[in-house]
Length: 132
Image 1 (cartoon, rainbow, N blue to C red):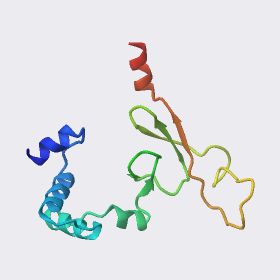
Image 2 (image 1 turned 30 degrees about the horizontal axis):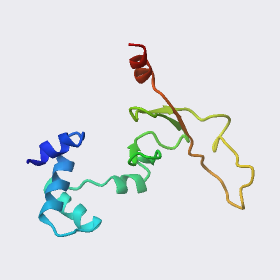
Image 3 (image 1 turned 90 degrees about the vertical axis):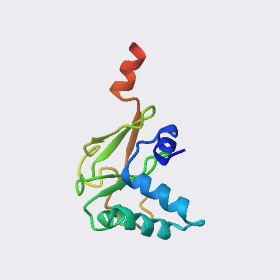
Image 4 (image 1 turned 30 degrees about the vertical axis):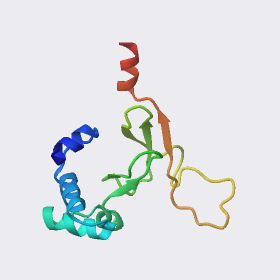
């Protein structure tokens, strides 16, 4: 079975990066993450979300039960709405007030500068499917 077919059968979109990962892992022998990344870069060029995240050009969010996601909206301490059914993520402005938007009951000595809030629910598209 071809890699494209395997990805589709697993319910994943076929992308150049995923194909490169599949080929690299298949040709290797229990490769660690660094070896996989090196092999992928050799196939499709320099691609590094981590570097863009570390440099502040991308923001990484990690909704529970979902792979990490990256976005270009940075520096404004916004939050996210996540659909429990389809996984769609929508930006929502700061909950209340100025950053960090929420204050913990006790800061335990930390200097809090950001709050990462995820609101969970069902998106309008999934809700409309219930009506049909």
